[in-house]
Image (cartoon, rainbow, N blue to C red; front, side, top):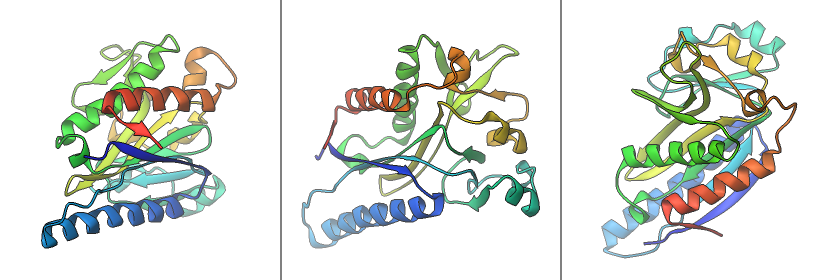
Length: 232
């Protein structure tokens, strides 16, 4: 089992370009697994973790409802935003500047074969990171992602998640609002959930801007501990 993960920070990168890159890495791992099975080989499969920040974009998961996007084509242009229907689970979400997006492209057979556990560990990574900032974040029953004040009228989502997996290989991942422009969430029904707000780390801390590099370091630390992995 290979628990080494190649980490790359892509900086600010177009959503479609990043999606294509993810697909390429995802497919390389899949093809290697198919080759192993067909030829009775035991070649090591690689793992990747991409950090990225996207220009304004709305993405709709394969089970999502298009009506949860509240902008037409003209309004999208005005907002300098684009829209994509994609192949992850989940409904609609927004990505943009000030948001840390993480895409683990892992062969889970290197770790454990349990998608439910995988999602819970991704959530736990974010929960532990936010705890370091004094925030008591948690899960919301029946909803993926990470939330604050669950069970109260002030429940709000700080991190969205949506993944795709095939033959235990994962892609897509999480989006943590750190210094996000929350106004862009007003143009969607986030994740199809009508009655709950969205928040960002800088808002919760009452700061103009939180150091995103520092947040990434904390996410990396908790990820490697939870997955008993190492970044290379």
